Length: 131
Image (cartoon, rainbow, N blue to C red; front, side):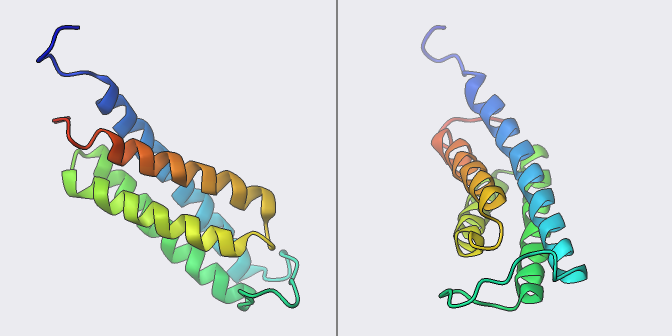
């Protein structure tokens, strides 16, 4: 590849990050839906710093999941502002999942890893022209 030729790596990373945003959003949405509809599904942890009602956590995950899905769709559509929005939402998602760790440790850990990769993929190549 010669200098001045655009690389396809940033474009591929952006699409992959958008798909991961959609997957993470769907997972958050279904975790939230489960917590709202069937709040006894998750074990209640006593004496934990972030002890919200399970239904409250469910609504947080539902709303965050919908926002992640929307931002992933806008990233796929090529909207440049959606990359920053997706990265910010992925950061918020990672923080909320950290607080959700006692209720679903394996799922939260996997989604935190996805969020970190999404943040990297959306922001690492933001200086390249990808459209």
